[in-house]
Each structure stands twice: as C-alpha cells, then as structure tokens.
Length: 160
Image (cartoon, rainbow, N blue to C red; front, side, top):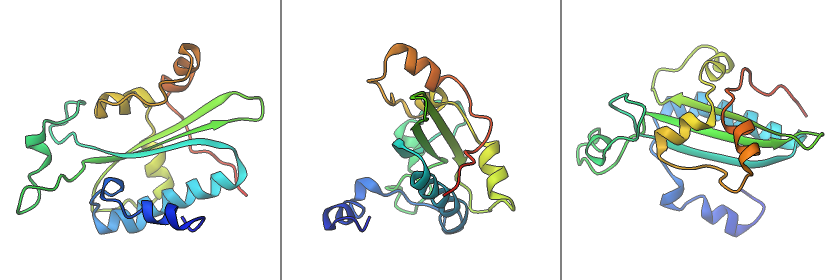
C-alpha cells in the first residue's frame, strides 16, 4: 500500500482489520497473500475480496451475534472461524475466472500451505451463504452463473 499516503492510511481503519491467530497470520495467510501479489503482477485481477466468517455452530449460515463474541474476556471482539478470499480474473479471451478459498482460522498451521489452500477451495455461492453477502452483483446473470457456481479445482499456477 505504498502507492499513496491515502492508500496506506486506509489499511489502518478498524473496519479493515480482523483479529487473527499469530501463526495463522504469519504463515498460512501471509503465504496466500504473497501468492495473490504474485498473481497480480502477471495477470489482470479485477477484484480481490477478503473477509471473515463467523460460523462457530457449523450450520453453514452466519452466526447470531451472541455466538461471535465469546472468545475474549470482555466478549466484545468477534473471532472469525474462517477467512475467505475471492479473486476475479479476466483471461486473455475475455472470460471471467474466479478463485475462492475459505480457510479455517486455526492457530495450528498445516505443513503444506498450498495443499491446505487447495483443500479449502470453495465456490463463491458457499461464501455468500456463510456471510449473508452478495458478491459481484453487477455481473450479468450468465456471468454470475459461470463465475459463482463452479468450485475451483486448483490454485492458479501462473508466475511472474
């Protein structure tokens, strides 16, 4: 975020932050963000959407507020159960491709980050259901169908 002082200042907004276990943030998530930065150098990434999920009861729907705020002594900070990242890319033929990952937020880290990320590939519709949000709503119905429904089968392989 060194492109401008304003962009850098935005990274410090509390609305742009979520508590993360240190090992998760410093290892798996840092690895994934480095992959994304690499992909943005070699391909046209249209959108990167990142957020947190609160599904402590495991029902596949957003938790009620009472379940999100129990992990801290004050009970006033929600600790996410998962983090997601959705990337939308336009390939050389003008076709939209999506990559979406929903990673459990755990302090214990996997030994193989790429294998763990691949094991947690999901379609965008699953993340929408878990968050109660609608992503990329301005796409045509056909484009939404082709981008949101398929579950990715692998991480993007392009390099610099």
